[in-house]
Length: 377
Image 1 (cartoon, one colour):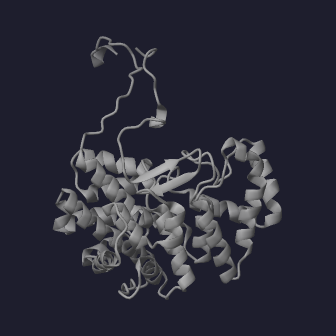
Image 2 (cartoon, one colour):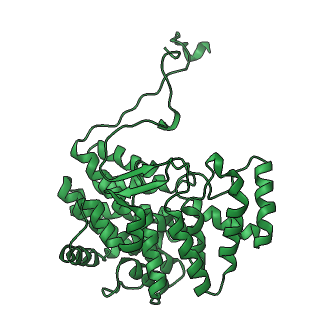
Image 3 (cartoon, one colour):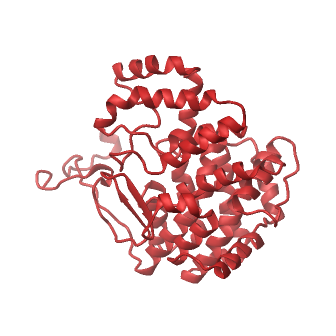
């Protein structure tokens, strides 16, 4: 049988379901949400508008967007017990704390146990608002500070920066955070979205699926690239060292972090928006060297583009966070903040025509053999 069964390790190239949410053309390097180019959304939309688009399938009218934004702002609350849980786990990695807090919300908020599409939407909106609050509260608590209360006058991204740093961000900084969330909001059947679908396939609730997604995103092979890029930039130190760094990596057959993608063979279409943002923010912050190092690495990697080693979105994200003075271990939680609406709609799609996801493994162990009692072994 092993000679007739084809194994697609990692489920590479396997279509397991249909989806009307995002379309990725890896060869052309394009990405759309609900048919809208990521370039149009990143240039003209807000995160709130994109979250509405993902969940409901259409761009909102002005009235619909205002109502949706109001619902998100109204959901910026956490039970007191969550702050106590964060305090008890404050020395843990922020992803572990975030996962634990979301799991606790499932026990503390009775409506989290409800299933069905409308319940998933309501719980999804609430989690979209609560996840950034958890991350910001943990950052405050582990540094001996009182968590900053949300500001209802601020939009989603600006409020996140306000709660994280305790100071109002500039319009440019808030917009860049907004674009970052838009670019990370949805990306097809990636590992964490697929894991969330597996959980929903068992008829579990949304909170359980989001906990699964967070656990999967925490792995460095999925969510950790931005952190690794920042470590690389620090190691390189100056633009003049980039070419030698890349040459040494390639000579040792080692990957250069931030290049290549499981799906894209051309440049990741999200990368250009982060590149422009890094350039502007580095100039605003008076630290242009970070951008210059990144561009020197890009230049050194050009000969390898024909092999599909093009820059991806995570290549620029870490430097943006660094310029904001955000600790490196918060990079993956920031990814999670943007991805919540994508997880929510993936879970809703899975639920509409639900089926238990149960792939097969081809057995290659010993043939059936007699059992030997322990005294005879």
